[in-house]
Image 1 (cartoon, rainbow, N blue to C red):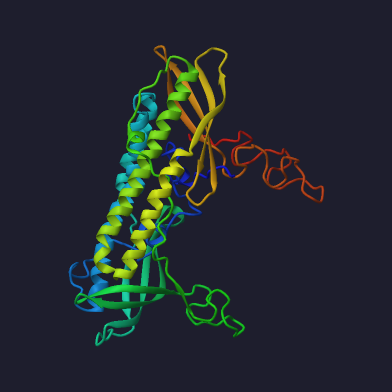
Image 2 (image 1 turned 90 degrees about the horizontal axis):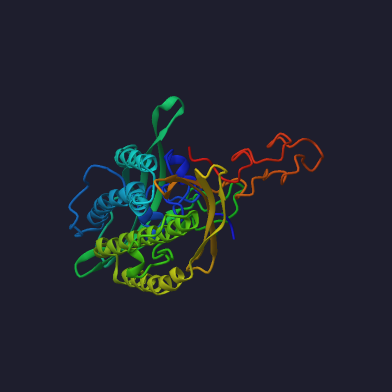
Length: 403
């Protein structure tokens, strides 16, 4: 088990967007396309000029361009949900128990995220090696996707970087229309040559030069029952009842995020169904059925609780550490921890802060390099903590101050 990482909150530079949700962090986040890297594993979307008629699948090349046009439109919806929708779900869940200052932070973050939806979106260009011939019932052709991405450079400037990767697609003709049967990508290790630097067959692709795409790899999700989406008001008159109300609401917010993910998957299966062969669609449908069946059981296995509640001597505020243990469909277990702060307001305890567990030390508070000893294996002063044994990221707190 490991403490859940919260890289997304650092990028947000605002309040924790969603404490107990499997938000992708910077180490595992899909590259600007939930569908491509997580749901179906197809093509990267972007805000490029319209490439063609979305319904034109009269030739492999036209079908490919139509596919990209649908993907471009779909990706903006995905981006809006990840950047804005998740934050709005969290705010709504805690609106009646949070302090006005905390709600103001969420409102500011939502406004900033809405602006970001259209900022720094990638663009791409397509280079066909040759116009694919469509004389039979199946055709394979090569192309290259040049992906232009805007990144923030030193000094606050935005610059554009480009990456190029070859692809190989196989289309089949079904009912008079061309549909994707298979897609492979140029191996990143050998750049599609199939050879290592020494001239031997590439280890990663076994000399093929191309690797299989992620068709049908819909992720396992803990899927909530309908009743889990409804908010239930809780007592805030004591610190313990306020903490327990927070746990209940966090579970509702988590359920709503999972429901949002499920709706995105369902929409993707519908929107992209015309572009895949019957075989591929059958595989995707079977996987989604499997995920739905296992997801209910996984959601039922979620556990949340708190470790301790510490009250300030003057009774003005309390801190509590809470945790969630969530079994995944794949059989793994994920632990997530938060430190909450409540303030006394008109006879009730109001949520004022949510400090996530430190990524570096996993809430231990000690230096991850020297395990809190202050010295390295050679007996010299640890360069990471400079000898005091505390984690430099959280300054020994075990939790990151969101402020």
